[in-house]
Length: 371
Image (tube, rainbow, N blue to C red):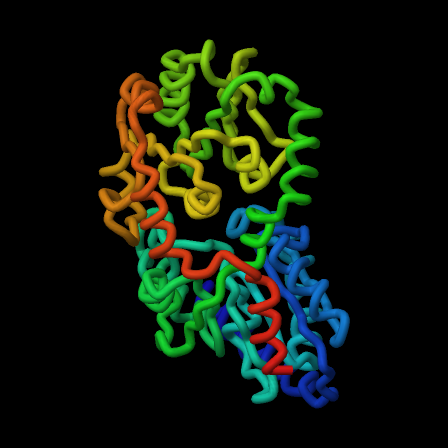
């Protein structure tokens, strides 16, 4: 029944869109996202440059709860899709950072260039077509019905090493993928931004100035029972005499632990927290690439690696990652005192992030070619 309904919706939307496309096209860039209701750093950096010469519009709206969303939320997003349709029909360029149905299921003007920015700087987990019919992926029938990730003219990518992963995930021709690094990487070398963020973080957490800081940024897990046990193991084995422990739980996490020794931060992004990080602990998160660019040693708490590979799948060989990988919390904490191979970290980052200088201006110059 749902497939029949979606087929009807696709037909109806394309009929409406046919008439909306009769409106004139403007030299405008529309940024679209379902990642968040807020404008991302990448969108803002590009938009601020482009609006000096062109019209710019941001359409950032998430469908909270996804398939479990309330009916009122679905209706609001449905109405938002008509706003998307208007700006798609009347703009020269559309830039997005995630999958958006109106991009894939509609028949667009030939004058519209659709650019997929994506929201991950490097490869780690399987996604899109490479994760179909897995526990955390989409069903293949729905993906094909909704033409998931279709109609992209260009996909930006940080390196040749990441190219095949994106091509497979989007199920597109690799020739559509161009090597340009995400704009927010410019901030990693911006001293003014670094000073501003550090001052904000130290004002809220003065203790972070007194010892070296280890930040734990884990991937979200739907079933958090085992994760909570392993998190408590990490806290109980941690050396609080030598380090501060900052834990950046995923926004969807429901875990609550009361321990005055630990900072459970939800005031700053993981990206901004990197500016006060001395060592980063993660598992399957692509934040390791931003951390690596800042020469932050990486550690991996991968107690559920086998389960994760079976349920979701990884897009690279975990053994290739630069740093110590441990399933046991006590061993992980001990690894903080071992000698770290910073040269291998540099080699790894250079492979997956080709350019780390002037990323915003280079991407803007390319976008202008289609305006």
